[in-house]
Length: 278
Image 1 (tube, rainbow, N blue to C red):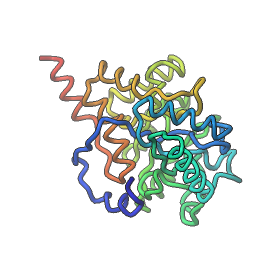
Image 2: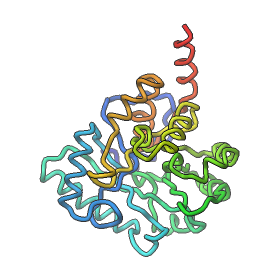
Image 3: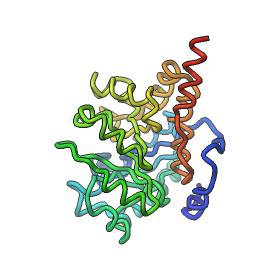
Image 4: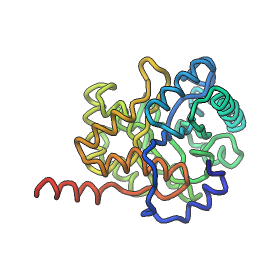
C-alpha cells in the first residue's frame, strides 16, 4: 500500500495515467467498530470487511463520521489507531482487504482550522481530497468553504448528493460548486433503487450527465447498508457503457487513494452516445 508520501508525490501524475487492475477501491465506508453508526463490535466489522472482499473490493477508506453529532469524538489520532487495529485483525483472520484512514466530515465552518491542527482527516490521509457530508436537515450554500479548501490545495468530494432532498431544488447552486475543484460521489446502492425512487432518479441523472465521477458503497452493516459495488458496476455498464463504469467505480476511486487527479466522465459519455447512434 502506498505511503502518505507516495500519495503526495502522486499528485503530480497525469489525469490520463492508466490505472491497472479490476478490483474496486471503496472511498466511503463505515467499517470501523464502535466509532459511529457502523459496526458495533470487531466481529461485526470483520463480517462487513468479508462482504467488501466478496464484493471485489481490495482497498477501503474507512470514513467514520466527523463533526456534526460526532464533534467530540472520532478525531484523527483515534481513527488512525482504529484503522491500525482493524488492519491487524484483518491480517490475522486472513481477510484480503487493506484499510486506509479517512473521514465523512460534516460541513462546518471550522473545517480548515481543524485540518491544520490534525483533528479531522482527508481521504486516505493523503492531504488532497476531503469527503464532505451536507447537513440532512437543511440546505446551505457551502461555496465559501469549497473556495477556502481549494486555496489550501484540498479538493472536496460531496458524498451522496443524490440522497439530499435540498439539492434537487437547487441545481444552479450545485453547478456553481462544480466550477471549483469539487467532485460528486454517488452511493452504489442508490443506483439500484435501495434509497427510493427520488434518489434513484437523481443518481442516474448526475451520473449520465457527467456531473458525478465517483461511486462508493457508504456501507455500514450487512442488513440495510451492505456493499453493492459489483451490482452497481454491472448496472452502469449496461446503461452507460463499461468504460464509464470502470472510470467511476475503479479508476477514479483509485486516483483518490493515490492522490492523483480525478478524471472527468464527459468525454467517455459523449463517445458512448456516438457509438449508440451508429
